[in-house]
Length: 106
Image 1 (cartoon, rainbow, N blue to C red):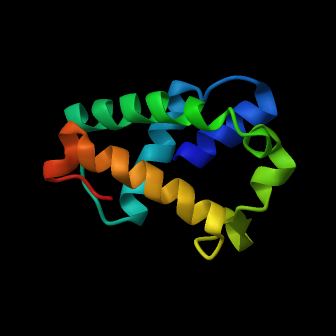
Image 2: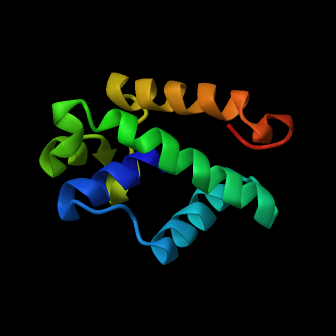
């Protein structure tokens, strides 16, 4: 979800719209076999808003062409990429430290 936020920022200089964030969260949760109630979704959205801007200090993460390289066929993330794995690990660490760590997916 953080990478989608980075792509949105690279393309528009704006954050994801709320409706897009909700759709993204639904897709992410469904794709990972996870379930969250609305309070957990709010916390997940807060974490996204907190974490994504931290990556904007890295030049390639503000460039849509560079970010596109993190995806493979069908706009699925390339988890074989060390960059994608690194972002995932940072996100996972923040998620584990959050209030969601007791039952949220990583």
